Each structure stands twice: as structure tokens, then as C-alpha cells.
Image 1 (cartoon, helix red, strand yellow):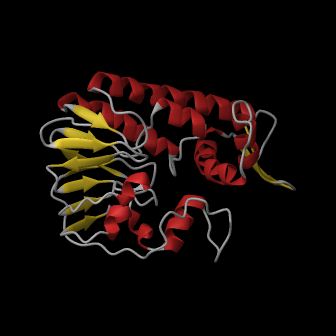
Image 2 (cartoon, rainbow, N blue to C red; image 1 turned 180 degrees about the vertical axis):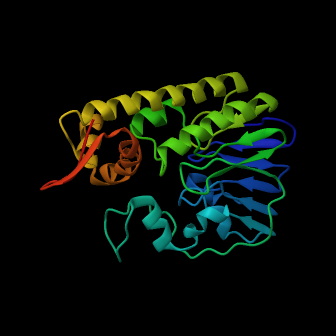
Length: 262
């Protein structure tokens, strides 16, 4: 999809942004197999579906410094699942197992948007912000129930930051979701912010009588998801713990683990 003479978005999950045919942002997912010989390969963060471009021969291969954990499989597993082991069927997002090296400096404006990961960043090219996983399409958000945020509260701050930055930009593109004109993208951003408020209220309700982080996840997910997988609970517990760290008024250790109460 052409955004301008110099900018194109290749649909996928993530969507891949191409600028002047020489700068590529977030090559991964189904787009990882595309033959894009770019001079500059940028990744918004270190998750395995965003970093295939960093394996390409390019003048520049850039990843935010705070996400250097992504250079090894062990680091990627620990920052995605919260733990690692030699081998397990639980690691369903091991899309890349290679070691990664970096080179050069980015040639575009970097916007720090932490929360999804410690170093998550957006890039401004051609007066468009590629916001990566700072927020998500409505269906993606509802499908996962818990958006993956290592730090939920910082992620909300990053979304507020995007609202301000976007005032001076032509558009905003996200990695997982549709590509629309700016007005519609701002509506999606607002939906994400409202969803974050609802998620906090659901978590508060789930711990009224006390619950572990995993119990909170299952209670909330089972309202809309029929087949909850162990990996879903593992990943969503990360966001849940970040929320619980601020909303729980009492935290105790019981037979079933760490229990949170409102």
C-alpha cells in the first residue's frame, strides 16, 4: 500500500514499512521471505517477529540499545516468556533461532516508545511515524485480550506521547493492524487507550476476593476465548503482573502462590 511517493507499507503481521526502497522497518513474519535488498534495516524492538531484517546483509542493521537482549535466542525467550530452557513446546514464538549482529547507525528520527519492551522505539520517515507495537489494531487487541506490555503503565504513557507527536505528522503506521488514513489511526489509538482503562477495571474486579496473576488472566480471557492455551496464560501474565503491581492493595504468599487483592 502506497502512502506517498517514497513510502510503502507491505501488509503482514507485522506490517513492514519501506522508505525510498532503501530503508526497511520491521521486516518479519510472512514478509521475512521477501527479497528486499535495503541499505538500512531497522527493528522497532527485539521480539522475534520483528527482527528478520537484522539477519540481512545491509549497511545498517539497527536495534534500540535497550533491546540488545534480542541478539541471542536465550535473551529473546527470557524477555518474551519470562524464562527459558533448552527446549520446550511452550516456545511457540521461536521464529528465529540464529544469533544476530548489528552494524552502523540509523539514518532516521528515533522516537522512544517503551512499554511493549524496554527499548521499543518508533521511527519517523517521510513525516510518518512507524509505531511498531506501541498500540494494536482493534481486532488484534480483542483477540489477545491482554496486549503484550512488559510495562503496562509505561506503554500507556507512550500511547499518550504518540497522540501529541501525531499532531505534526501525516500519518501513523502500526505493526499489527490495518493501515488507514491518519484520522482513523488516531481513532484506533484512542480505542487502545480506552481498552487499557477497561483492562485495569477487569483486573481490579478479578482480584476482589484474591487471585494469582495466572488466575486473573484465565478469569478475564475465559469471557471471550474458548480455547485458552498455556502459552497464552504465560504471555498474558506478564501484562497482568505489571497492572497488578499498581492496582493491588494487598499482596500475600499463599499455597497457590502470590495472591493479589483489591
